[in-house]
Image (cartoon, rainbow, N blue to C red; front, top):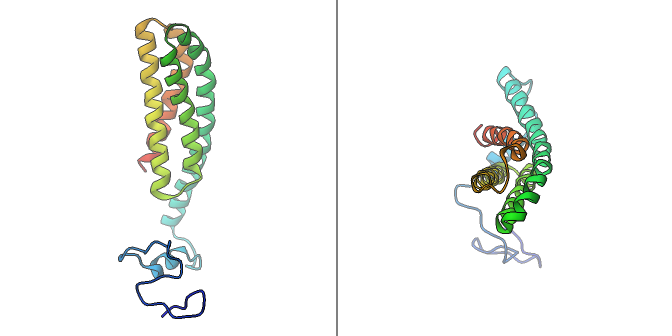
Length: 167
């Protein structure tokens, strides 16, 4: 039995830290440790392909973040013109546009499903930006020529985010 902080034995159901969450029954620490070992000998062709794909996805993450910042810059003139006609739509567009690079950056710092979750949120926000721009053009608040630079970058961002969330 494990020892507590004061050296006393703990029963099987108790932990030294009462706030500590129990691991699920299916959790196997030995599998986690064995999957982290690097001493498995020379890498096979499959491992090399996996490594190349991983590096490619890593580069796409950096690229999509830079593109998201470009999209925000391209949105600026559109947001300023939309604000003259519809202040609420301009605020929603600005929030959604700011959410895209924020969630991409946060996703890049996460792992596993948490990472994919943030990339999906970024894709949803990018879709929201697309919708708000379409609404603004439909209302005549802004012309198509003003939103075209943002739409061009936005299309590429959505394509890369699709690839990152559907490996």
